[in-house]
Length: 307
Image (cartoon, rainbow, N blue to C red; front, side):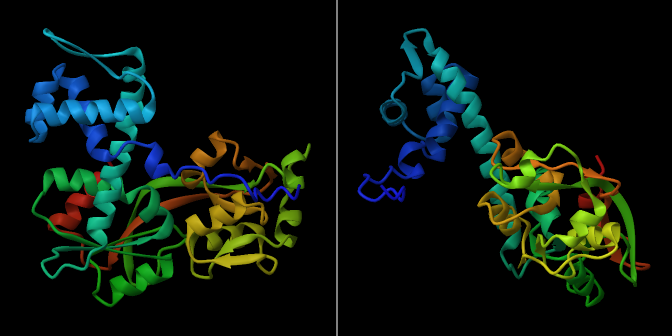
């Protein structure tokens, strides 16, 4: 056998194995209200439609989720567990929706945000959800790029507020530190470095080709300065997600934000490789043109990042 999986029946896609968001929202409403009828009214559907959706979800998952009685609807033990998972999926969908809305180029936008990739991917969606709850009528547009691009957009008057992750503040911008971050060296479990018994030295790391972000990214700048120079990249990619995917695939080691790899580390898709004598802590900053302190929605968003 060649191990390629030839001849095996294709696995059902995730879309066919996981209930849709509407069904998950219904289950959460039943858990919160203790009533299928009340959940149906809250979501604007009929009770028969709600019952049918719950039964369909039970068939799809192969477990009973709700016990129905004249006194109301109660989650089964399996239903309670599925509800906890559903809550996380719905929260992730809300973050996705907030980020996607901000990416749309809308003519009525009143807040233009430029953010470096790590912040845009892992922190900004949560801030935008909070901003929307405070200012539901504020339309937001988002530009994601490396820290150098963020500075260019601000200085060109194309953004009202920016977020960067480099070591220094670009010329012409004022800033405030909103959070701290740490870069860590990671690799796939099958890589030889995953079995090292001693930490990687700064010299070894500097001389090894790594999977890197493009020139201009804050992550690469921090690593370059900390090591006093870098070897020619093994692969150069333009987003944190792409670097992470390449590392997971076994292409080679990478240095990434701790924010970006929590799930991969917990699932052992990536492992941390200790590094000795290298300071890879960095500040995450909000930035704006010098002398133009953020006002209105930009000021509100800035306050949310430091809550």
